[in-house]
Length: 98
Image 1: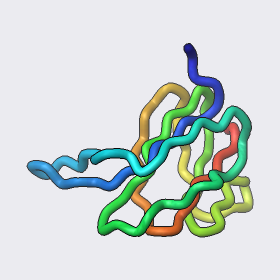
Image 2 (image 1 turned 180 degrees about the horizontal axis):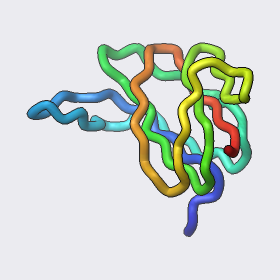
Image 3 (image 1 turned 90 degrees about the horizontal axis):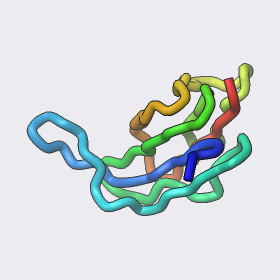
Image 4 (image 1 turned 90 degrees about the vertical axis):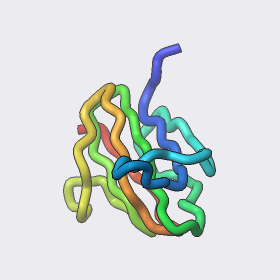
């Protein structure tokens, strides 16, 4: 089955020999259309979103993320590339097609 839209996994991070690795995911979500996750990053010491999209996209992370051109701090994620983005407890992820 091919990915349609964006898939995000939220998981704690562990530092192993200077490499950040995901631990057991807290949650994951596939969003077929642009929008904001309904789930938030849990309260743990180090946590990240791992993102993969089927199209070039912009993503934003924060308590009220805005991935639009007017949004602050958005990140470009190329299609079919997996990207890890560190986040804070309570953060959500938003995305729009580039």
